[in-house]
Image (cartoon, rainbow over all chains, first blue to last red):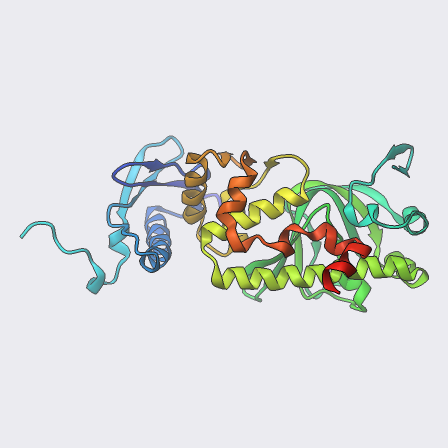
Length: 89
Length: 246
């Protein structure tokens, strides 16, 4: 328990930043990335049904002081066949 | 107006307040006013049902649980009703977990006393059983909305039901708690609340959600917040209940 760190998962799109006011206590940054990918998969599931594109969404993972630790794009959570097409040749 | 202890006031619990005066006098000696801290487990699965609670402030969630610790909310109880209804149905242990989600207060009654007063007064028992029936309908509606409504609709429904059952516009609860109740991910709740806040429907600050535009929440909830969610007073009040289901 003493090794747990509070990670914040802010959602950023091209237009807005949705601040995570609570954070989650997790063992390390790898666990934080895993959590972000799992959440993104769930959010994709709903978005696909509702025909919304989350390609521009990403989690900006920070520590309690707001220092940026890692960015996890939602499309990283998709299976290979669902990856957005590359924008450049 | 009712005498409760030294103070003259309504009890603050709908189920107690709709009782006939004679029924209320029957149950009153068994009631003890208690503080209910957030996170307190009022009922645990497999444990003996030894208590009932008539909340006056705060909210308690009825949770269906798996043995691995996962769970989902199946009903919400506040000042509308009674926690520990199984005691009235011949149960000695509970199927569900009931936990205080928004801290508050209420009246504690020993389960034996609850059974005893229900045995002594048919009218009191009928009123309590109407609430049990209402809870069954609420659970059915929760199943229906979980399967057929969007997260946004279900979130709006939850906030409206919480607003109905807890005095005031402020709900002291975290996004994590809301996510657990709705069986969704925390960022899903945070994102949905952000959208509601953008439209001025709620205000969300750390561990506090303030309802600002109830009508807009009702429009958003649509079919998810219908007669069964909104009309619990009519469903519990005997004469109105008969009229509704005749």
